[in-house]
Image: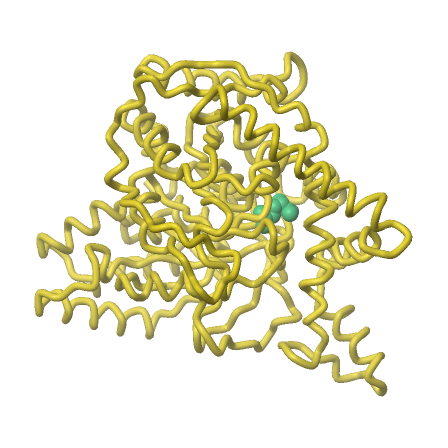
Length: 488
Ligand code: GLN
C-alpha cells in the first residue's frame, strides 16, 4: 500500500525543496484513501479528477515562483457539512441526497486561497449530531486502532483520515466536542477555536450559537498552521469576530515556564470515570509542570448541569435550523404525497434518521409555549452560570486541563440503543462550547491499546496559548507519533 503522508510542515518543506510535486502528493493521498476506504469508511466522496487538476495548477504556480502560500498544493480533507461549490453536500443525511452546493463555505475558500487541495469529503454523524459517526446514512467510519470501535464523532471521518495518513490534516466542526472527541479517539490533535474565530458561512447549521469550524492534524504545529489559514473575520457571518489573526505558528516557542494550569476539581472525581484515563491526563500535566508550568486547583461548580444544558440548547436550535429541509428547497422530496402537508411529512420522515428526529422532537418540545420557560429559558440561564464559572477559574490560571473524554473509544453499536450514554461521552467537551472558548485535544497516552486525549482550554481568543502548551508537550513526548498498525 502507498505510504502515509507526512505532516503539513514536512510536506511544505518537501515542496519547497522540490523533492516532490503537489501532483505526487495528491495522487498518493487519493491512492491511500482508496486503498483504506473499504475497511475504514472515512470518506463520503473523493474529488480525484478535480484534486489532481488543482495539484497541477499548484505545481505550475510553484514553478513560476508564485505559490499561494507555503501550503500550496498540499492535500486536505473536509467534513461533509462544509459547502464546496459544485460538490455534493450531504451532511451524512438521506434528506440531502442529490444536493450539490452552489457556493463555497468561507473556511474552504480560505483553504483554496492558500492553495490547499481538497481531496475528499469526510463522513460524519447526520447533521453532526452524534459522538460516534454511526448516525451517518452511509454507514459508520471505523476506528483505525480497532475496527470494532467507533472513531468518535461527529467528525469521525476527518479524524480517521488524518490518523491513517491519507491527508496530513482536515477540517471538522465542533458543536459540543465533535472535533476534540474524535481526535482523542483516533490519536490525533483536534482544535476547536473560540466561537466566531472561523466563519460559519457555508457550515451547515446544527446549533448556531455553539457551532464552530475546527482543525484536525497530527501535531499542534500543523493545527496552528491550518488554523492560521482558515481563521479570520468574515463580514458575511455576523457572529464572526473582527479581531486580526495572529501568527499561530510563531507562538510555538516551546516555553511554558510560569504557565498556570488549572485542574477543575469537578472533572477529576475520586470515584467514577476511567481511572486509567485520569492517570494519563495527570501524567501529561506533570510533564508540563516539569517543563516549568504550575498546577493549580480551580472549581467549575456548574459542571454537573453541562450535559442537560447543552442538550436542551442544541436540540432547540437544531429543531429551528432543520425546519428548512422541507422537500421544497433542498435535496430529497417524497414522490408519494398527494397534498403539500403530506409531502412535508413524508419527506422529513423518509429523509431524516432516528437521532435527528429525536433531536427535532426534543427541541420542538423545549421551545413549545408551555415548556419554554421551564426548559429553554432555564438552560440559557444555566449557560450563563457555566460561562461565569470559566471566567472565575481563569482569574487563577491561564489554561484548564481535563481529559477530552471519560473513556477511550467505545464499541460500534454499544451505545446506539442508549442515547443518554452516548450523550455522556461529551461530558468534558460541551461546557467549552456553551462558554464559546477555544480548546485542543492532544494525544497523551493509551488505555488498553487505544489513544486518549488531554484537553487544554483557554479564555476567549487564547488559541496561541493552547497551541503553545500542546506543542511544548509534544516536543517532550511521542504519543502523537504513534500510528495505528495498518497506517505505520
Ligand atoms: N456529540 C455531541 C452531539 O451529539 C457533539 C456534536 C458536535 O459537536 N457536532 O451533539
